[in-house]
Image (cartoon, rainbow, N blue to C red):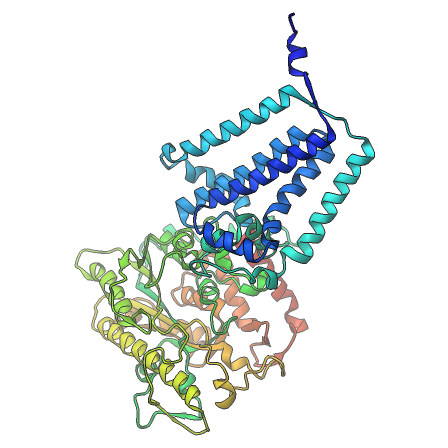
Length: 622
Protein backbone atom coordinates (compact mmCIF):
# COMPACT_ATOMS: atom_id res chain seq x y z
CA UNK A 1 0.00 0.00 0.00
CA UNK A 2 1.51 3.35 -1.04
CA UNK A 3 1.63 6.39 1.22
CA UNK A 4 1.90 10.01 0.26
CA UNK A 5 4.76 12.10 1.77
CA UNK A 6 2.22 14.07 3.78
CA UNK A 7 0.88 10.86 5.31
CA UNK A 8 4.39 9.64 6.13
CA UNK A 9 5.50 12.77 7.99
CA UNK A 10 2.25 13.05 9.95
CA UNK A 11 2.10 9.48 11.21
CA UNK A 12 2.48 10.44 14.87
CA UNK A 13 0.95 13.05 17.11
CA UNK A 14 2.71 13.97 20.36
CA UNK A 15 0.36 13.87 23.33
CA UNK A 16 0.60 16.50 26.03
CA UNK A 17 2.29 13.98 28.30
CA UNK A 18 4.79 13.03 25.59
CA UNK A 19 5.49 16.70 24.87
CA UNK A 20 6.27 17.40 28.54
CA UNK A 21 8.41 14.25 28.73
CA UNK A 22 10.31 15.25 25.59
CA UNK A 23 11.04 18.72 26.92
CA UNK A 24 12.06 17.34 30.32
CA UNK A 25 14.51 14.89 28.78
CA UNK A 26 15.96 17.55 26.48
CA UNK A 27 16.38 19.96 29.42
CA UNK A 28 18.41 17.38 31.34
CA UNK A 29 20.49 16.59 28.23
CA UNK A 30 21.24 20.29 27.72
CA UNK A 31 22.27 20.56 31.38
CA UNK A 32 24.66 17.61 31.00
CA UNK A 33 26.00 19.04 27.76
CA UNK A 34 26.77 22.36 29.47
CA UNK A 35 28.79 20.51 32.14
CA UNK A 36 30.77 18.57 29.54
CA UNK A 37 31.47 21.70 27.52
CA UNK A 38 32.88 23.41 30.62
CA UNK A 39 35.40 20.54 30.72
CA UNK A 40 37.56 21.93 33.52
CA UNK A 41 36.88 21.37 37.22
CA UNK A 42 33.77 19.27 36.65
CA UNK A 43 34.70 17.30 39.77
CA UNK A 44 34.26 20.33 42.02
CA UNK A 45 31.01 21.14 40.21
CA UNK A 46 29.71 17.62 40.92
CA UNK A 47 30.82 17.99 44.54
CA UNK A 48 29.05 21.33 44.85
CA UNK A 49 25.89 19.86 43.34
CA UNK A 50 25.99 16.91 45.72
CA UNK A 51 26.54 19.14 48.76
CA UNK A 52 24.12 21.85 47.61
CA UNK A 53 21.41 20.47 45.27
CA UNK A 54 20.16 24.03 44.77
CA UNK A 55 23.13 24.53 42.41
CA UNK A 56 21.64 21.93 40.05
CA UNK A 57 18.39 23.87 39.94
CA UNK A 58 20.20 27.19 39.47
CA UNK A 59 21.80 25.85 36.28
CA UNK A 60 18.81 23.80 35.12
CA UNK A 61 15.96 26.23 35.81
CA UNK A 62 16.86 28.74 33.05
CA UNK A 63 16.72 25.92 30.51
CA UNK A 64 13.33 24.71 31.72
CA UNK A 65 11.85 28.22 31.97
CA UNK A 66 12.93 29.21 28.46
CA UNK A 67 11.54 26.00 27.04
CA UNK A 68 8.26 26.45 28.92
CA UNK A 69 7.99 30.03 27.69
CA UNK A 70 8.54 28.97 24.06
CA UNK A 71 6.07 26.09 24.45
CA UNK A 72 3.45 28.53 25.68
CA UNK A 73 4.30 30.90 22.85
CA UNK A 74 4.20 28.33 20.03
CA UNK A 75 2.35 25.33 21.42
CA UNK A 76 4.97 23.21 19.64
CA UNK A 77 7.09 20.99 21.93
CA UNK A 78 9.74 19.86 19.36
CA UNK A 79 10.27 23.44 18.19
CA UNK A 80 10.53 24.70 21.78
CA UNK A 81 13.05 21.99 22.60
CA UNK A 82 15.03 22.69 19.42
CA UNK A 83 15.12 26.45 19.95
CA UNK A 84 16.16 26.14 23.61
CA UNK A 85 18.85 23.63 22.71
CA UNK A 86 20.17 26.00 20.06
CA UNK A 87 20.36 28.92 22.50
CA UNK A 88 22.21 27.05 25.25
CA UNK A 89 24.36 25.02 22.92
CA UNK A 90 25.48 28.23 21.23
CA UNK A 91 26.18 29.75 24.64
CA UNK A 92 28.02 26.70 25.94
CA UNK A 93 30.17 26.39 22.83
CA UNK A 94 30.93 30.12 22.82
CA UNK A 95 31.86 29.91 26.50
CA UNK A 96 34.22 27.01 25.75
CA UNK A 97 35.80 28.80 22.80
CA UNK A 98 36.33 31.99 24.78
CA UNK A 99 38.08 30.06 27.54
CA UNK A 100 40.20 28.35 24.90
CA UNK A 101 41.06 31.52 23.00
CA UNK A 102 41.33 34.16 25.72
CA UNK A 103 41.20 32.36 29.08
CA UNK A 104 37.94 34.06 29.96
CA UNK A 105 34.34 32.74 30.04
CA UNK A 106 31.35 34.16 28.22
CA UNK A 107 29.70 36.98 30.14
CA UNK A 108 26.76 39.31 29.62
CA UNK A 109 29.12 42.13 28.59
CA UNK A 110 30.28 40.00 25.63
CA UNK A 111 26.86 40.05 23.99
CA UNK A 112 27.42 43.66 22.92
CA UNK A 113 30.63 42.66 21.15
CA UNK A 114 29.25 40.04 18.76
CA UNK A 115 30.91 41.47 15.66
CA UNK A 116 34.28 41.75 17.39
CA UNK A 117 33.96 38.14 18.52
CA UNK A 118 33.28 36.90 15.00
CA UNK A 119 36.32 38.81 13.82
CA UNK A 120 38.49 37.09 16.43
CA UNK A 121 37.17 33.64 15.54
CA UNK A 122 38.04 34.17 11.88
CA UNK A 123 41.72 34.48 12.78
CA UNK A 124 41.92 30.94 14.22
CA UNK A 125 42.36 27.58 12.53
CA UNK A 126 38.91 26.19 11.68
CA UNK A 127 40.05 22.67 12.66
CA UNK A 128 39.65 23.49 16.37
CA UNK A 129 35.94 24.01 15.78
CA UNK A 130 35.34 20.76 13.84
CA UNK A 131 34.05 18.63 16.71
CA UNK A 132 31.74 21.41 17.87
CA UNK A 133 30.36 21.94 14.38
CA UNK A 134 29.67 18.23 14.00
CA UNK A 135 27.83 18.25 17.33
CA UNK A 136 25.66 21.17 16.27
CA UNK A 137 24.80 19.47 12.95
CA UNK A 138 23.75 16.26 14.73
CA UNK A 139 21.52 18.17 17.14
CA UNK A 140 19.92 20.05 14.26
CA UNK A 141 19.25 16.80 12.38
CA UNK A 142 17.60 15.17 15.40
CA UNK A 143 15.24 18.06 15.96
CA UNK A 144 14.58 18.40 12.26
CA UNK A 145 13.41 14.78 12.32
CA UNK A 146 11.16 15.51 15.31
CA UNK A 147 9.64 18.50 13.53
CA UNK A 148 8.92 16.42 10.42
CA UNK A 149 7.61 13.19 11.87
CA UNK A 150 5.65 14.43 14.87
CA UNK A 151 2.75 16.80 15.21
CA UNK A 152 2.17 18.49 18.57
CA UNK A 153 -1.08 18.30 20.45
CA UNK A 154 -2.76 21.66 20.23
CA UNK A 155 -2.91 23.56 23.51
CA UNK A 156 -5.84 25.74 24.42
CA UNK A 157 -5.07 29.45 24.29
CA UNK A 158 -5.58 29.97 28.02
CA UNK A 159 -3.19 27.09 28.84
CA UNK A 160 -0.53 28.68 26.66
CA UNK A 161 -1.13 32.07 28.25
CA UNK A 162 -0.75 30.58 31.72
CA UNK A 163 2.53 28.96 30.65
CA UNK A 164 3.87 32.25 29.33
CA UNK A 165 2.88 34.27 32.39
CA UNK A 166 4.05 31.62 34.84
CA UNK A 167 7.46 31.16 33.20
CA UNK A 168 8.07 34.92 33.00
CA UNK A 169 6.92 35.47 36.59
CA UNK A 170 9.08 32.65 37.93
CA UNK A 171 12.11 33.85 35.95
CA UNK A 172 11.73 37.43 37.19
CA UNK A 173 11.19 36.39 40.81
CA UNK A 174 14.08 33.92 40.79
CA UNK A 175 16.43 36.52 39.34
CA UNK A 176 15.51 39.19 41.85
CA UNK A 177 15.68 36.92 44.89
CA UNK A 178 18.06 34.02 44.21
CA UNK A 179 20.25 34.67 41.17
CA UNK A 180 21.43 38.07 42.44
CA UNK A 181 22.11 36.84 45.97
CA UNK A 182 25.79 37.17 46.88
CA UNK A 183 25.37 35.06 50.01
CA UNK A 184 24.07 32.12 47.95
CA UNK A 185 26.72 32.67 45.26
CA UNK A 186 29.53 32.53 47.82
CA UNK A 187 28.21 29.27 49.26
CA UNK A 188 29.79 27.13 46.55
CA UNK A 189 33.44 26.11 46.61
CA UNK A 190 35.86 27.10 43.85
CA UNK A 191 38.62 24.94 42.43
CA UNK A 192 41.48 27.08 41.24
CA UNK A 193 41.58 30.82 41.96
CA UNK A 194 38.58 32.81 43.17
CA UNK A 195 39.79 35.82 41.15
CA UNK A 196 39.94 33.85 37.89
CA UNK A 197 36.55 33.93 36.19
CA UNK A 198 37.00 30.73 34.23
CA UNK A 199 37.70 28.83 37.47
CA UNK A 200 34.60 30.32 39.11
CA UNK A 201 32.36 29.54 36.13
CA UNK A 202 33.65 25.97 35.88
CA UNK A 203 33.13 25.37 39.60
CA UNK A 204 29.59 26.77 39.78
CA UNK A 205 28.25 26.25 36.26
CA UNK A 206 28.49 28.88 33.52
CA UNK A 207 24.71 29.32 33.21
CA UNK A 208 24.33 30.31 36.86
CA UNK A 209 27.45 32.50 36.86
CA UNK A 210 26.45 34.18 33.59
CA UNK A 211 23.08 35.18 35.06
CA UNK A 212 24.56 36.23 38.43
CA UNK A 213 27.04 38.58 36.74
CA UNK A 214 24.35 40.40 34.74
CA UNK A 215 23.63 42.63 37.74
CA UNK A 216 27.21 43.95 37.61
CA UNK A 217 27.46 44.25 33.83
CA UNK A 218 24.30 46.07 32.84
CA UNK A 219 24.15 49.84 33.17
CA UNK A 220 21.64 52.49 32.29
CA UNK A 221 22.63 55.74 30.67
CA UNK A 222 22.54 58.81 32.94
CA UNK A 223 19.42 60.95 32.85
CA UNK A 224 19.28 63.31 29.84
CA UNK A 225 22.27 61.59 28.25
CA UNK A 226 22.66 62.00 24.48
CA UNK A 227 25.40 60.19 22.64
CA UNK A 228 25.68 62.70 19.79
CA UNK A 229 26.57 65.46 22.24
CA UNK A 230 29.78 63.67 23.15
CA UNK A 231 30.52 62.50 19.64
CA UNK A 232 30.56 66.16 18.67
CA UNK A 233 32.83 67.01 21.60
CA UNK A 234 35.28 64.32 20.56
CA UNK A 235 35.61 65.92 17.15
CA UNK A 236 37.43 68.77 18.90
CA UNK A 237 40.39 66.47 19.59
CA UNK A 238 43.73 67.69 18.28
CA UNK A 239 45.38 65.82 15.40
CA UNK A 240 48.34 63.74 16.66
CA UNK A 241 50.18 64.67 13.47
CA UNK A 242 50.40 68.24 14.77
CA UNK A 243 52.80 66.94 17.45
CA UNK A 244 55.19 65.36 14.99
CA UNK A 245 58.08 67.66 15.87
CA UNK A 246 57.36 68.22 19.58
CA UNK A 247 59.46 66.73 22.37
CA UNK A 248 58.34 63.27 23.44
CA UNK A 249 59.95 62.15 26.70
CA UNK A 250 59.80 58.52 27.73
CA UNK A 251 57.07 57.95 30.33
CA UNK A 252 57.09 55.31 33.07
CA UNK A 253 54.00 54.78 35.22
CA UNK A 254 54.49 52.67 38.34
CA UNK A 255 51.63 51.63 40.58
CA UNK A 256 53.21 50.15 43.70
CA UNK A 257 51.17 47.47 45.43
CA UNK A 258 49.68 48.75 48.71
CA UNK A 259 52.06 51.72 48.72
CA UNK A 260 51.17 54.33 51.37
CA UNK A 261 52.75 56.80 53.74
CA UNK A 262 51.32 54.95 56.74
CA UNK A 263 54.86 54.97 58.14
CA UNK A 264 54.56 58.73 58.65
CA UNK A 265 51.82 58.26 61.23
CA UNK A 266 52.67 60.32 64.32
CA UNK A 267 52.48 57.20 66.49
CA UNK A 268 55.10 55.30 64.47
CA UNK A 269 58.77 56.25 64.71
CA UNK A 270 61.80 55.00 62.70
CA UNK A 271 64.65 56.87 64.41
CA UNK A 272 66.47 53.63 65.17
CA UNK A 273 65.44 51.81 62.00
CA UNK A 274 65.37 52.23 58.24
CA UNK A 275 62.73 54.71 57.12
CA UNK A 276 60.43 52.89 54.63
CA UNK A 277 60.01 56.13 52.64
CA UNK A 278 63.56 57.45 52.78
CA UNK A 279 64.10 57.43 49.00
CA UNK A 280 60.51 58.16 48.06
CA UNK A 281 60.51 61.37 50.11
CA UNK A 282 63.77 62.52 48.50
CA UNK A 283 62.43 61.92 45.00
CA UNK A 284 59.03 63.46 45.80
CA UNK A 285 60.76 66.60 47.10
CA UNK A 286 62.38 66.99 43.67
CA UNK A 287 59.22 66.04 41.78
CA UNK A 288 57.26 68.34 39.48
CA UNK A 289 54.02 67.47 41.30
CA UNK A 290 53.45 65.36 44.41
CA UNK A 291 50.80 64.80 47.02
CA UNK A 292 47.95 62.34 47.45
CA UNK A 293 45.25 60.82 45.27
CA UNK A 294 41.84 59.67 46.45
CA UNK A 295 41.17 56.02 45.70
CA UNK A 296 37.86 54.18 45.83
CA UNK A 297 39.10 50.95 47.35
CA UNK A 298 40.72 49.65 50.53
CA UNK A 299 42.73 46.47 51.15
CA UNK A 300 42.26 45.26 47.57
CA UNK A 301 40.69 46.14 44.24
CA UNK A 302 43.96 47.14 42.55
CA UNK A 303 42.37 47.18 39.09
CA UNK A 304 39.98 49.97 40.10
CA UNK A 305 42.76 52.48 40.81
CA UNK A 306 44.77 51.24 37.85
CA UNK A 307 41.77 51.73 35.58
CA UNK A 308 41.04 55.23 36.89
CA UNK A 309 44.59 56.45 36.33
CA UNK A 310 44.82 54.99 32.82
CA UNK A 311 41.40 56.18 31.61
CA UNK A 312 40.44 59.22 33.77
CA UNK A 313 37.04 57.55 34.27
CA UNK A 314 35.74 57.72 37.82
CA UNK A 315 34.85 54.19 38.96
CA UNK A 316 31.79 55.62 40.74
CA UNK A 317 30.24 56.38 37.36
CA UNK A 318 30.12 52.64 36.58
CA UNK A 319 28.16 51.67 39.67
CA UNK A 320 28.94 49.94 42.95
CA UNK A 321 31.04 46.78 43.33
CA UNK A 322 32.13 46.85 39.72
CA UNK A 323 35.45 45.57 38.46
CA UNK A 324 35.80 47.62 35.25
CA UNK A 325 38.07 45.02 33.70
CA UNK A 326 35.14 42.57 33.69
CA UNK A 327 33.31 44.91 31.30
CA UNK A 328 36.03 45.82 28.81
CA UNK A 329 35.57 43.85 25.60
CA UNK A 330 36.75 46.30 22.92
CA UNK A 331 39.14 49.20 22.36
CA UNK A 332 39.19 51.64 25.25
CA UNK A 333 40.53 55.18 25.28
CA UNK A 334 43.48 55.29 27.67
CA UNK A 335 46.88 56.84 28.26
CA UNK A 336 48.37 53.95 26.28
CA UNK A 337 46.22 54.61 23.21
CA UNK A 338 46.89 58.37 23.43
CA UNK A 339 50.66 57.95 23.62
CA UNK A 340 50.49 55.31 20.91
CA UNK A 341 48.79 57.84 18.61
CA UNK A 342 51.88 60.03 19.05
CA UNK A 343 54.19 57.27 17.87
CA UNK A 344 55.16 55.82 21.25
CA UNK A 345 55.91 52.17 21.78
CA UNK A 346 53.73 50.94 24.64
CA UNK A 347 54.34 48.19 27.17
CA UNK A 348 52.72 46.95 30.36
CA UNK A 349 54.62 45.11 33.10
CA UNK A 350 53.17 43.02 35.91
CA UNK A 351 55.06 40.26 37.71
CA UNK A 352 51.88 38.24 38.19
CA UNK A 353 49.58 36.03 36.16
CA UNK A 354 48.32 37.54 32.91
CA UNK A 355 44.79 36.30 33.55
CA UNK A 356 44.52 38.12 36.87
CA UNK A 357 41.93 40.90 36.44
CA UNK A 358 41.89 39.77 32.78
CA UNK A 359 44.84 42.06 32.07
CA UNK A 360 46.02 39.85 29.20
CA UNK A 361 42.97 40.99 27.22
CA UNK A 362 42.28 44.39 28.76
CA UNK A 363 45.79 45.74 28.17
CA UNK A 364 45.47 44.96 24.49
CA UNK A 365 42.19 46.91 24.39
CA UNK A 366 43.96 49.80 26.16
CA UNK A 367 46.53 49.98 23.38
CA UNK A 368 49.59 48.29 24.86
CA UNK A 369 51.86 46.63 22.30
CA UNK A 370 53.42 44.25 24.81
CA UNK A 371 52.43 42.82 28.17
CA UNK A 372 55.15 41.25 30.30
CA UNK A 373 53.79 38.88 32.94
CA UNK A 374 54.49 35.39 34.26
CA UNK A 375 55.18 33.27 31.19
CA UNK A 376 56.20 36.28 29.11
CA UNK A 377 59.10 38.19 30.63
CA UNK A 378 58.76 36.75 34.12
CA UNK A 379 59.17 33.18 35.36
CA UNK A 380 57.92 31.21 38.33
CA UNK A 381 61.62 30.69 39.06
CA UNK A 382 62.24 34.43 39.55
CA UNK A 383 63.15 35.63 43.03
CA UNK A 384 60.12 35.76 45.29
CA UNK A 385 59.59 37.62 48.51
CA UNK A 386 56.53 37.15 50.66
CA UNK A 387 55.09 34.70 48.13
CA UNK A 388 55.30 37.02 45.11
CA UNK A 389 57.97 38.04 42.59
CA UNK A 390 60.14 40.66 44.24
CA UNK A 391 60.11 44.34 43.40
CA UNK A 392 63.84 44.07 42.64
CA UNK A 393 63.00 41.70 39.77
CA UNK A 394 60.08 43.87 38.63
CA UNK A 395 62.11 47.08 38.53
CA UNK A 396 64.92 45.21 36.77
CA UNK A 397 62.38 44.38 34.06
CA UNK A 398 61.61 48.10 33.71
CA UNK A 399 65.31 48.83 33.27
CA UNK A 400 65.65 45.98 30.77
CA UNK A 401 62.65 47.30 28.79
CA UNK A 402 63.98 50.86 28.55
CA UNK A 403 67.54 49.79 27.66
CA UNK A 404 67.03 49.66 23.83
CA UNK A 405 65.58 53.19 23.97
CA UNK A 406 68.81 54.55 25.40
CA UNK A 407 70.79 53.51 22.34
CA UNK A 408 71.97 56.08 19.80
CA UNK A 409 69.75 56.23 16.76
CA UNK A 410 66.59 55.02 18.52
CA UNK A 411 64.28 58.01 18.30
CA UNK A 412 61.09 56.14 19.26
CA UNK A 413 59.65 57.22 22.61
CA UNK A 414 58.42 54.62 25.11
CA UNK A 415 55.39 54.53 27.39
CA UNK A 416 55.39 51.93 30.19
CA UNK A 417 52.86 51.01 32.83
CA UNK A 418 54.12 48.79 35.63
CA UNK A 419 52.15 47.21 38.47
CA UNK A 420 54.26 45.70 41.27
CA UNK A 421 53.13 42.76 43.38
CA UNK A 422 55.66 41.96 46.13
CA UNK A 423 53.88 43.81 48.95
CA UNK A 424 50.49 42.21 48.28
CA UNK A 425 48.69 41.08 51.46
CA UNK A 426 48.24 39.32 53.81
CA UNK A 427 50.95 40.62 56.05
CA UNK A 428 51.01 38.40 59.13
CA UNK A 429 54.58 36.96 59.07
CA UNK A 430 54.53 37.55 55.29
CA UNK A 431 58.30 38.10 55.07
CA UNK A 432 59.16 36.14 58.21
CA UNK A 433 59.75 39.34 60.18
CA UNK A 434 59.18 38.70 63.88
CA UNK A 435 60.96 41.64 65.52
CA UNK A 436 59.51 45.18 65.15
CA UNK A 437 61.30 47.50 62.70
CA UNK A 438 59.73 50.61 64.24
CA UNK A 439 58.92 52.14 67.60
CA UNK A 440 55.31 52.85 68.54
CA UNK A 441 53.97 55.70 70.61
CA UNK A 442 50.85 53.68 71.37
CA UNK A 443 50.32 50.22 72.82
CA UNK A 444 50.22 47.52 70.11
CA UNK A 445 49.95 43.77 70.67
CA UNK A 446 52.35 41.26 69.07
CA UNK A 447 49.99 40.52 66.19
CA UNK A 448 49.62 44.20 65.29
CA UNK A 449 53.39 44.72 65.48
CA UNK A 450 53.92 41.70 63.25
CA UNK A 451 51.47 43.00 60.63
CA UNK A 452 53.06 46.45 60.54
CA UNK A 453 56.65 45.18 60.57
CA UNK A 454 56.09 42.85 57.63
CA UNK A 455 54.22 45.55 55.71
CA UNK A 456 57.03 48.06 56.29
CA UNK A 457 59.60 45.51 55.16
CA UNK A 458 57.79 45.33 51.81
CA UNK A 459 57.75 49.14 51.61
CA UNK A 460 61.50 49.23 52.18
CA UNK A 461 62.06 46.79 49.30
CA UNK A 462 59.94 48.98 47.01
CA UNK A 463 61.79 52.10 48.16
CA UNK A 464 65.20 50.58 47.39
CA UNK A 465 64.07 49.39 43.93
CA UNK A 466 62.55 52.79 43.12
CA UNK A 467 65.76 54.57 44.13
CA UNK A 468 67.85 52.32 41.89
CA UNK A 469 65.69 53.12 38.87
CA UNK A 470 65.56 56.86 39.49
CA UNK A 471 69.34 57.06 40.01
CA UNK A 472 69.79 55.42 36.61
CA UNK A 473 67.38 57.86 34.97
CA UNK A 474 68.99 60.87 36.66
CA UNK A 475 72.23 60.05 34.84
CA UNK A 476 70.56 59.56 31.47
CA UNK A 477 70.64 62.12 28.67
CA UNK A 478 67.33 60.71 27.49
CA UNK A 479 64.23 62.55 28.81
CA UNK A 480 62.31 60.38 31.30
CA UNK A 481 59.19 61.04 33.35
CA UNK A 482 58.15 58.76 36.22
CA UNK A 483 54.65 58.74 37.70
CA UNK A 484 54.54 56.77 40.96
CA UNK A 485 51.55 56.04 43.21
CA UNK A 486 49.85 53.52 45.48
CA UNK A 487 46.71 51.61 44.57
CA UNK A 488 45.18 51.29 48.05
CA UNK A 489 45.93 50.98 51.76
CA UNK A 490 46.86 47.52 53.08
CA UNK A 491 44.36 45.46 55.03
CA UNK A 492 45.88 45.48 58.52
CA UNK A 493 42.86 44.46 60.57
CA UNK A 494 42.48 46.69 63.66
CA UNK A 495 45.89 48.36 63.38
CA UNK A 496 44.34 51.61 62.13
CA UNK A 497 42.17 51.92 65.22
CA UNK A 498 45.20 51.82 67.50
CA UNK A 499 47.41 54.09 65.40
CA UNK A 500 44.86 56.89 65.26
CA UNK A 501 43.21 56.39 61.90
CA UNK A 502 39.70 55.92 63.25
CA UNK A 503 38.81 53.38 60.58
CA UNK A 504 35.17 52.61 61.42
CA UNK A 505 32.52 52.12 58.74
CA UNK A 506 29.79 52.60 61.33
CA UNK A 507 30.86 56.08 62.37
CA UNK A 508 30.89 59.45 60.62
CA UNK A 509 31.62 59.12 56.93
CA UNK A 510 34.67 61.41 57.13
CA UNK A 511 36.42 59.83 60.09
CA UNK A 512 38.15 57.23 57.92
CA UNK A 513 38.88 59.24 54.78
CA UNK A 514 42.63 59.22 55.36
CA UNK A 515 42.90 55.50 54.50
CA UNK A 516 41.65 56.36 51.01
CA UNK A 517 44.46 58.81 50.18
CA UNK A 518 47.65 57.28 48.79
CA UNK A 519 50.83 59.26 47.96
CA UNK A 520 52.04 60.00 44.43
CA UNK A 521 54.58 62.01 42.51
CA UNK A 522 55.24 63.02 38.90
CA UNK A 523 59.00 63.32 38.47
CA UNK A 524 61.16 64.22 35.49
CA UNK A 525 64.92 64.03 35.03
CA UNK A 526 66.87 67.06 33.87
CA UNK A 527 66.61 66.04 30.22
CA UNK A 528 62.81 65.88 30.50
CA UNK A 529 62.60 69.26 32.23
CA UNK A 530 64.73 70.76 29.46
CA UNK A 531 62.57 69.20 26.76
CA UNK A 532 59.16 70.08 28.22
CA UNK A 533 58.23 73.02 30.52
CA UNK A 534 57.02 70.68 33.25
CA UNK A 535 57.67 72.95 36.20
CA UNK A 536 56.24 76.00 34.46
CA UNK A 537 53.10 74.08 33.56
CA UNK A 538 52.73 72.80 37.11
CA UNK A 539 52.89 76.35 38.42
CA UNK A 540 50.41 77.61 35.82
CA UNK A 541 47.90 74.92 36.81
CA UNK A 542 48.44 75.51 40.53
CA UNK A 543 49.96 72.08 41.07
CA UNK A 544 52.76 71.55 43.56
CA UNK A 545 53.93 69.36 46.41
CA UNK A 546 50.63 69.16 48.29
CA UNK A 547 48.29 68.24 45.44
CA UNK A 548 45.15 66.33 46.39
CA UNK A 549 42.70 64.94 43.83
CA UNK A 550 41.00 61.77 42.59
CA UNK A 551 43.10 58.96 41.14
CA UNK A 552 41.05 59.44 37.96
CA UNK A 553 42.77 62.81 37.46
CA UNK A 554 46.36 61.58 37.76
CA UNK A 555 46.70 60.43 34.15
CA UNK A 556 44.95 63.49 32.74
CA UNK A 557 47.22 65.71 34.86
CA UNK A 558 50.24 64.03 33.29
CA UNK A 559 48.92 64.86 29.80
CA UNK A 560 48.35 68.46 30.88
CA UNK A 561 51.93 68.80 32.14
CA UNK A 562 53.15 67.48 28.79
CA UNK A 563 50.94 69.95 26.85
CA UNK A 564 49.08 67.13 25.06
CA UNK A 565 45.76 66.96 26.94
CA UNK A 566 43.90 68.36 23.92
CA UNK A 567 44.46 65.03 22.15
CA UNK A 568 41.49 63.89 24.22
CA UNK A 569 38.61 66.31 24.98
CA UNK A 570 37.57 63.90 27.70
CA UNK A 571 40.95 64.16 29.44
CA UNK A 572 40.68 67.95 29.19
CA UNK A 573 37.32 67.86 30.93
CA UNK A 574 38.73 65.57 33.61
CA UNK A 575 41.28 68.28 34.39
CA UNK A 576 38.49 70.85 34.58
CA UNK A 577 36.78 68.63 37.15
CA UNK A 578 40.06 68.33 39.07
CA UNK A 579 40.16 72.11 39.36
CA UNK A 580 36.48 72.26 40.34
CA UNK A 581 35.72 69.25 42.54
CA UNK A 582 39.08 67.51 43.04
CA UNK A 583 37.82 64.79 45.37
CA UNK A 584 34.63 62.80 45.09
CA UNK A 585 33.82 59.29 46.22
CA UNK A 586 31.49 57.20 48.30
CA UNK A 587 33.18 58.80 51.33
CA UNK A 588 32.21 62.33 50.34
CA UNK A 589 33.29 65.39 48.36
CA UNK A 590 35.99 68.04 48.72
CA UNK A 591 35.91 71.13 46.50
CA UNK A 592 38.83 73.27 45.37
CA UNK A 593 38.51 75.47 48.48
CA UNK A 594 38.83 72.42 50.74
CA UNK A 595 35.18 72.36 51.82
CA UNK A 596 33.96 68.89 52.77
CA UNK A 597 30.41 67.62 52.23
CA UNK A 598 28.63 64.28 52.15
CA UNK A 599 26.72 65.14 48.95
CA UNK A 600 27.66 66.94 45.74
CA UNK A 601 27.68 70.70 46.43
CA UNK A 602 24.79 72.26 44.55
CA UNK A 603 26.99 74.69 42.63
CA UNK A 604 29.03 71.76 41.27
CA UNK A 605 26.11 69.42 40.56
CA UNK A 606 25.96 70.30 36.86
CA UNK A 607 29.69 69.74 36.38
CA UNK A 608 29.52 66.40 38.22
CA UNK A 609 26.54 65.35 36.10
CA UNK A 610 28.45 66.16 32.91
CA UNK A 611 31.45 64.17 34.17
CA UNK A 612 29.20 61.18 34.77
CA UNK A 613 27.78 61.45 31.23
CA UNK A 614 31.27 61.79 29.78
CA UNK A 615 32.37 58.69 31.70
CA UNK A 616 29.36 56.71 30.50
CA UNK A 617 30.04 57.69 26.89
CA UNK A 618 33.75 56.87 27.05
CA UNK A 619 33.24 53.48 28.69
CA UNK A 620 29.94 52.15 27.35
CA UNK A 621 28.92 54.08 24.28
CA UNK A 622 31.99 55.26 22.39
